[in-house]
Image 1 (cartoon, rainbow, N blue to C red):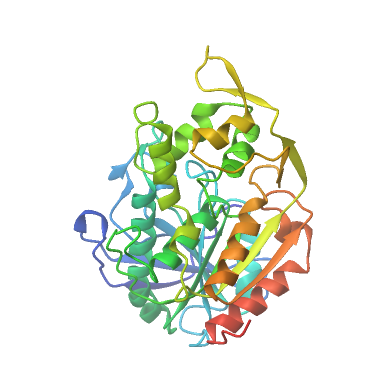
Image 2 (spheres, rainbow, N blue to C red):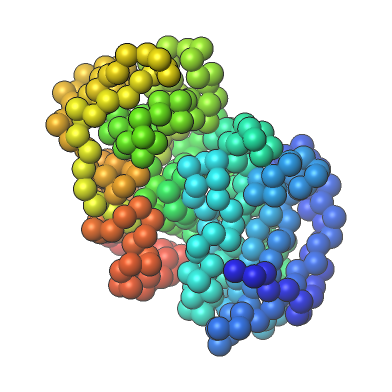
Length: 374
């Protein structure tokens, strides 16, 4: 989508970025009418922190920036407009705040939501650094800390937020939301400046330590162990090839949203796909010239005592087990949730099934208003 620029301009007061306490300059908030919408506006390339292209990162997609979609022009919006923070997907190493979700954000603005779609530090050595889950979560926290001043500038109140994302963004959104209720697990000292009213996961991994999730990832990566398991190891703060795989498994368990679940976690909206399966008789190699091993060996590799199934259900990228594990965990913890399992591929459900978008909006509004009924 071509960036929409110009329009109503306001100045937002200076902020201090969480990463390195870098002073933030005043920024221009350019609100422009979205041509194909009757009342939606957009503000592109706003800054929520001091890490910017050429100033802390070589990758524009890892800069602390966001796009803002509004249900009207600045200063003319209903003060109680619900606020939704979106975290994009891309396997934690690619993607950006625009992606293929722009039409969704415009539609949400038409429905009365204010939506911020943010960039965050990606795990990409080629494009600006190997960033971890900790740094990604710190970026989300910095964005949330930025919101009170932004709300004042555009004339709305943000007492609570809804947060959500697709794929990797769904995983990070769940982690951030659940950390607010159980901060001792991650121990990152995140500020959580605004309470999370609810969290939305669009095919977001809920258990990245599970063999099923790794099997699905290996199949997607055509058996490349380094691209799948190696990436997860680095994201969790480990050194691929330098530590025992069971130690890596413990790290991955820590960064699995289900490990943070308790009764104080916010209501959760779950949307997952199921399009087929992969047999665990498939093979991979831990090293380029190493022996071939079956996917079933992964259960032993991560220290699981479970018997491997003959096949793993998946949506083309993520194992369907993530839906089952998350909804079972929410039920056991007594956390309110709504969930849908759809016969559509990874992160395509909102596009392919038109019924899911009204369902999402209805539940976001319900939980933002404080209705926690199941």
